[in-house]
Structure formats: structure tokens, C-alpha cells
Amino acid sequence: MNARPVAGVPILRLGNVLVTGLLDELDDKAALAFTDELTQRITAEDASGVLIDISRLEIIDSFVARTLMELTTMARLLGARVIVAGMLPPVAITLVELGLHLEGVETALNAERGMALLGWQQNRQLPEGAPSAALH
Amino acid sequence: MLRSTDPSASFDTAPRPDPRPGEPHSYPVRTEEDLLAARHAVRAATLALGFGIVDQTRIVTAASELVRNAYIHGGGGTLTLTLLERPGARGLRLVISDDGPGIHDVQQALTDGYTTGAGLGHGLGGARRLMDDFGIDSAPGRGTTVTATRWTTP
Image (cartoon, chains in turn orange, yellow):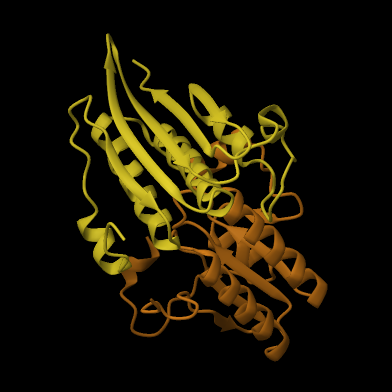
């Protein structure tokens, strides 16, 4: 029963920030594998920040909340700052009603603002060859 | 095993509940894959009943807490979905039952922060807040059955 890759989500490096995300199909094994890989990558790649995009998470139950809080704490102990970005509004409403406030977890409205918190500035200059309509 | 546990198969072919009221559909809660399949079934039922996005999220989250409880603390169990109808509203009833050790003190188990496992201790009390009607039938050695209903708002 292991058709799924060990950790289904890619972890990309942009400078000293690791960029990744969580998907709805997170189970215990996947969460453990993701935690292992992320902490190893923080150390191996000397990362000072981690952006976790959760805009694809349709629900956050206490299991996913615990995973996010533990990831944040582990990363902080290693010296990296975690920003959790892109929570859907119904998820925020439900989390509060559930009594989960994600204490200690820094959040941002979207990935772009999260990256700004981690020291990345948006560059309005177009890459060469990009259609000019992309600015609008 | 009542159903295939191949996740790639269960997502696309998960049985969609018939939106007609009164016919319960049951789903096993025995494996991690079953937890996901159960969530998908609950989501499909909330869509069929016309719940808004926030209510959908509340109900699926509550279902996720309850089936995970049955899986972890009850050693597995069954989720039964029933679509309900009353004048001016439709409802979804979740019944989650397991044959596990049961809950010694139901009131204590509903208290925020109380946990016997690796969770955050908000599962049961939190799920109750997310639903309109909520009941627990449990005693040591007799397993646990949680019944939770949410109604559409006109």
C-alpha cells in the first residue's frame, strides 16, 4: 500500500528560503515523512525561512493543526522562521470554532506576502520575453 | 475489507450519496485511506444537500475529527451518513461507531484540552461546536457511538 511517494509535496529552495505546501490528503505517514524531509532540508541547505502554502487545504482538523504547530516549532529550534500562507476563510472560521488558534504559528494572507515577511521583495520587472500584458 | 483501499481508485469512484432523504450509506473506518474516503463522502453529501462553503467546511472537519477518533481510539469503526429533511431545512446526520474500549467519562472527554492520545484534545468538544445536534453513547467495554447532525439554514 505504498503507491504514494514518501512525501508527496516538493520542497523548493529560493535563496535561503524553502518553499513548500500541504495538500488535503495528508495522513500520519505522509506528515511524518514531510516533517523528516523538511527538517533535513533546513539543515542541509542552511535555510533561514520556510514558506508553507496551505491554500489547497480544504480543512484543517486537530491532526493537521498539530502537524503545522510541530513543524513550526522544529524549524524554529533549528533557527528557521516558518510562515504559513494562504489559509482559506472557511478554514479560519472553522479552526476558531474548533478551539484551535495555531499558537506560535506565523501566518500570511498569501504566498507573496509570506515571502515578503521572509525578506523577499516583489520585482515588477518582467523577465525577458514575457508578454507585456502580464503586468496588468 | 469491504472496499478497495487503493486511494487512486477510491477518490474517483467513491460512492456518491443519493440526495434523497432516509437512505443511510455506510463507510468503513479501518485504514488511513478510509479516513480520506470518509471525508470525501461527507463532502459529497454536503454538496448534494446544498450546504454553503463554511458549513461544508464545518461538517467535513467535524467528520474528520470523529472518524479519526474511531480509527485511533476505537480501533476502527463505521461512518454512516443519513440525509434528512424537515420543513424548510435539510440535514446531514453523521453516525460514527466503534467497538473500542469506550469512553470512561464522556463529560471529561468533551472538555477542551483533555486528551488520551497524541492529538490536541480539541477533537470531541470541537466537533460538537461545529454541529447543531450532538450526542455520545459510550461506556467502558461497550464501544462508542457519536451522532452529529447539522441543518441547512434557510
